[in-house]
Image (cartoon, rainbow, N blue to C red):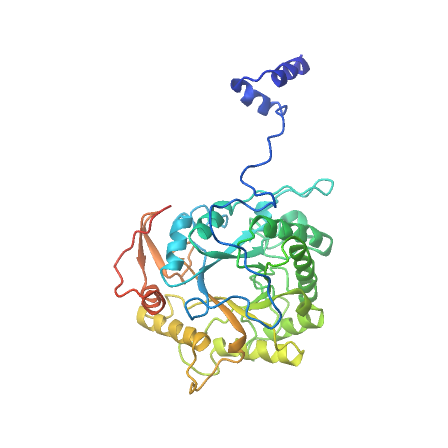
Length: 418
């Protein structure tokens, strides 16, 4: 009888039956999504074009109005899959970035959310939680740096230490599945500034069960090859290396590998041939300008290791760093971040502490967009009324004056939601 009912439902073209055929799993497959362009890209009404392919030894990104391209890290987007959003729309995120003269937003893309179930018979099924944010950003002239991280539990031998998704790269047998996901991201989002492979794999933040630089490099290589097969012009960033071990007082342990040690194994394992640039996180550990400041030490360690391995032409992107609001008063915090910006963008030739490798740096991304989101203390704005009114902090105002030409900074701003 059920079979007869299903047949009748399949023959009937009455919209009222659609719900029942869904319930019985007898609906015909929907037509291909009109949201996709013929090449598999998410359709966006924009004049923005994909970046041209990167050239060895040349900057990854052109300067913007004479300065290095810069941006913020996404933390407060409403609908963010990290669960810490519920603050700003995609258009507002773009306004926050454009308001300081920026053109990039670093956006986490969680593999575990996109593919919570393992592929069946080699067929991958993805859910795309970042479509709306991507559309809103590129529509308003902001390119995302898409950071792929967060393994699903089926891609691990153990989920010890994991929460919703796991800050742990997949096991070797599942690296091809991650590479397939990376390729799908590249195919869907071709207007991205870059795809970054994982986040701080050298420490416990990005590898909760212990860092493994050789395994990370194998993952990077597979992802790089898969991305380039789909979008040869897409920039692939390796590393996203945390600052741990920049100083002598931080030894390699089971949970944290020194920055230089991790990078050295990466290069010995062939990472140089599988990334267009190396991303790093030069967080200052001090408000004082001196060589003991981790900002300078990170660059010193990284360039020293690159040079020692014959990789002195490797391009660099400072893809995450900032100063928390709890570490400095607003004026001092803004001054430090402006100083570090000038160190990278237009250094004083007479500077006492020049940044090693500064001429290789092609982009700067500050952490983060909105404070007070999931205990984040690094934001450049705070939300007053959800999705309506925001209070720019002094650092945002100062960069708006410095790079975007604003003369004054209001107490609150109300960027358009769409």
